[in-house]
Image (cartoon, helix red, strand yellow):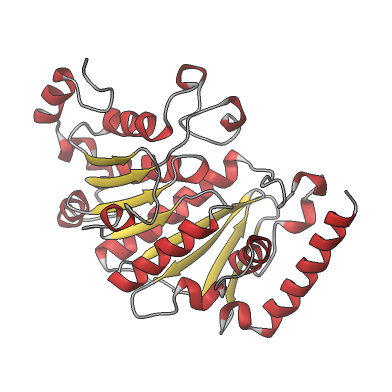
Length: 304
């Protein structure tokens, strides 16, 4: 029986006759024809096919990126419905990576997509990043170990890496560019326990904290149980920002601000904050925020 991951004969026929230039003609104006052709030849790796990862993929496909590496080990469930673009009644129980690849090829059947349906780990990470022009982080918030390894290998190989975090009803951006401050230099995770990494991740992702004032159910955030609230609005905003950064990085035009510079936009509060935190989480403002976060976490743990 033919694997569901392999293109059908109909898909192969569609690929051979797909009018790429016509399909993405409305991008022209914001990009030149030569730039669109360049995007067609780029390869982007996206780890995670859920909330942000899935919508990252679909946004970049519609931008005309021609090749992807996508990774996710999970399958769609009802709990994904509020925020994951591939989560529908028709896809319940189906592997996220396979569903997202199918959706992507339904937009552009000539895509070259390499699927890592077991997710990424230390063993397949080198292959996942082979030949890619850009890495975009779509991993679950709590995937600390593999996120740390992925950004470290990106830095080692000189691969630009972008993370845009969905926070509340907004998005927070950090770029890690070759030759600039690395993920580890910014977040300073080292071999810390996961609870400490979680606190440092939150503080480092969005120093401005624009999302915090309207969290109406604080009990929904529970690091110990690895859960937190989410919105589709935030995921869509993240994808728009990530794809715009991808365009600038891949085409080599426009301002790309690398860490320790960051940006957070919050649609609920109609606010935009640009941040600059020299030394990352070793900045005195971050050290204070981390200490406060630790006390709050300890109080939550004691209250159980």
